Each structure stands twice: as structure tokens, then as C-alpha cells.
Image (spheres, rainbow, N blue to C red):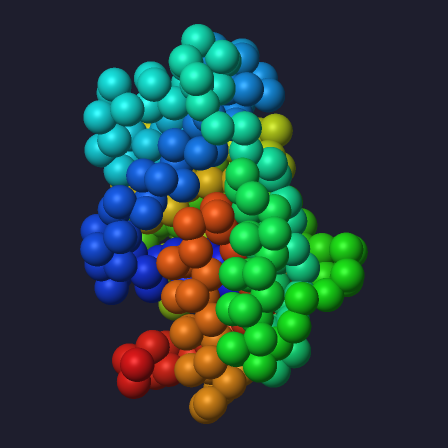
Length: 247
């Protein structure tokens, strides 16, 4: 399974999302604000805003909260002007890491991100050093308990998905970003539950880490998750399940 998909699923199972709902809301509000600023406040004509609102609703964000964020983005309410930054680097064992940030203080953000890399035994690299190792794709992860491969192929491939990959306990539906909405609508229309539905960066190849490096990678991801300015992060790390169990 892709590093990001696997980590998202594991976080879901561990209940980390519920424990950090306040941080999730903060990150979503930033994304909604920036999406509205860049593409307008109408989600029908602004795919980025539409995806952000879907994520907000999935986290049960109150309607008035995301409506205020939209108004701050469109200038109807005073708001912070966030800057988008992407950092690339290497984590434990030399794994590739991409970190997407939204910030109102570039110096604070790079200091926090660099600190997380350094504590994990990694380092921030130059622009382009690892981005080429990832492909931007739509990803929908469905548990094997909620559907089967034949059904998913019939529903998703017909809607424009390019591939369905079988993992240990789930199926990953992969699509081009431009086809993601149509595929998600088809999955929703079929009443199929999913654990992850997002446009993400999927690594072309995975790098196995184990032992101390696996533990360092888990702590590193937790540190990035705790950083308010970090919106999303991606890695090509292939971490064995037992590493999470031992933490």
C-alpha cells in the first residue's frame, strides 16, 4: 500500500484523528480559506474548495465554521493571508518525504519542519530532490469488509478510475485528479463506504524501514502531524505493522 494511504488508515484505526480533532479543524479551516481565496467561494466551480468542504463535513465541522472560513477567503470577513509552502527532504533510512504547509510566518514554519527532520535523523533537501518520486493521484481506500474487487471494478473503472490495487485488508482505487470527483460520486452512489477519499501524492516505489528507523519514522510523522502549519505530508516509507504495535 502507498505510504500515505497506509499511514492514513493506521491513524484512523488508532483513533488519532478523534484525539486531535481541534488540530484537524485548524488545518481544514486554513485549507478552506486558501481555496476560497484562490478559486472563489462557490464549491461547484472550485474543485479545491469542494474537496476541502467534503473533508470538513466528514469531520463533522459545524456549517457556520466552514462558512466563516469561506468568507475570510473571499474577503467578506477579515482573515489571515496564508502562504503555501512545500518542503522536500529525507527521513530515517533515507526515505523520501514531502511536506505541504500553509503559514502566516515562513520563518516559524521552516524552523519547525527542519527541527522535525533533524530529530528524526533526516534533513530538509533542495526543491525537486524527492518530488519526482511521487505522482499526484485521486485515492479512495475501501476496506475488504465493505466491498469486493469485482464490485469496485464495475463501479470505479466505469466512472474513470485507472486502477484498483489490492492490499492486505483493503482496496485502493486510483484515478487521475481530474477524474476523482466522478469516481467518488460513483462510489458514493453505490453506497460503498470508504476509509480514505482524497487527492494525494502516491510514491512510485516504496522504501522499507524497520527496527529503530521504523520507530523514528513513526515519531517523525507524529511530529509533523502535531505541527499546526503542516497541512499534509507524504512518504515512500514502507513500515511493518509490528512497528506500530510496539510503539
